[in-house]
Image (tube, rainbow, N blue to C red; front, side, top):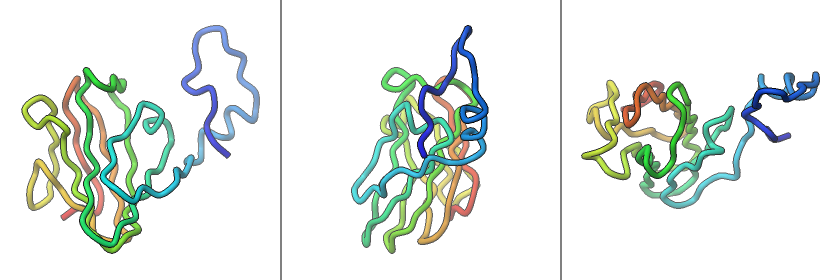
Amino acid sequence: MGITGYPYVTGDILTAADMNVLVQFDVKTAQTADYTPVLADGYQTLVPMNKATAVNFTIPTNASVAYATGTVLNILNIGAGAVTIKAVTSGTTTVLSAGATAAQPTLAQYKSAACIKTGTDTWYIVGAIA
């Protein structure tokens, strides 16, 4: 079951089915190459990454994809290769974490992270990062 029609706008009439789907994730098809999330990835979506070698999850600039402040991008690494979370344009988008490399944290296999947008081009990465 996927999240459809979300986000809602003024005047929408919500049904029980609309509300019940908000408590679950829409699990995307596993990404097997470098991936830059799209606008739809910001709404209760889990993005699995699955590659045997290193792969990148690159957060776009606000000018490319205007996520609302407070948006959360959820990542799960199911592949053997490490997933590096970084900015498409590091001079514009700031990625901050408690990882070994604050601007480019990594996820080992079976680890997950949430990328939380706190400002126009500022993201904090929390979770099982290195």
